[in-house]
Length: 350
Image 1 (cartoon, one colour):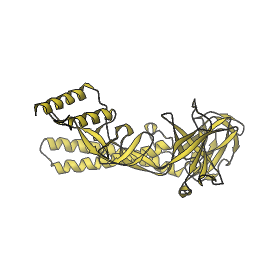
Image 2: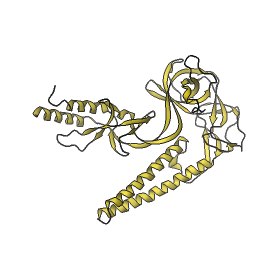
Image 3: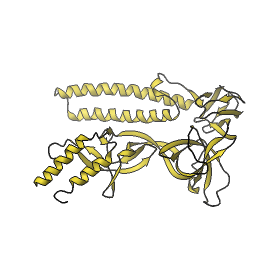
Image 4: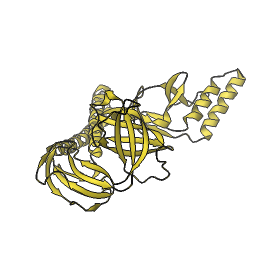
């Protein structure tokens, strides 16, 4: 018994001696994804298209054929009813959330004075959390379209498309003042000596793939973003899979031509899940777990094991079931907490 108490005390002291990072579980929008095998290739004078991400009306071009453009340079202004509705909803929901937060604070003050019930306080809290979740989901969708909500003061139908890589404008594919639908090719760019990914997609996903979708390559511990520029018409004879070409948008050093690597294709509508950082997940007793701080004092362990079910993931986060939004968890060095808990479970044994 004395040995067990001494071991537990040493473990708790050891945990406090190491700085264990924590974070709070948040809701995050995820896209459906599929893992791919891919090959790094290089195509001289490769073409790619700038796609419309929304339907609307082309108001103005900022570039012309033959012009050199830089990544991030604005190329076209589109007026879109979709953007107008999304920005209007965002501003409206933001105002509703501000009003609800005031209601919650007022109810909390009344509750502390004994003038209202806990049930009434919980109703206000649930309403506030629901509005916050909707606002975060809409914020994520707008951010995906490149719209900075921090600078959004009023509803607007204006949507600006930017070049996602350096190149030369080969052709303006849609005339100004024409109406376009989502995923319409607007501008053709030529990239000189560009790196590309040649990815192999299972036939079952043939109806899901579109030009402009994101493919993230996992190479040397880094996540490198590319976008689909071409879907080859012939199935690869060896793998019997659809062949995709995606342009690597960022400048990356030490890429080896013809090397094979893993990649992830993201597609479909976004869906929000409560998520944790990938570094938080551990495999413990044949289950995925995260470690949650407790209020343990004295002989109790400062962390508990929480079994979770991974649902979906992106480059940095994992959507999980088994942990609530806002709940604190160990976000890094989970291997250290795991080793301490394993030692603690040994008890009087060796």
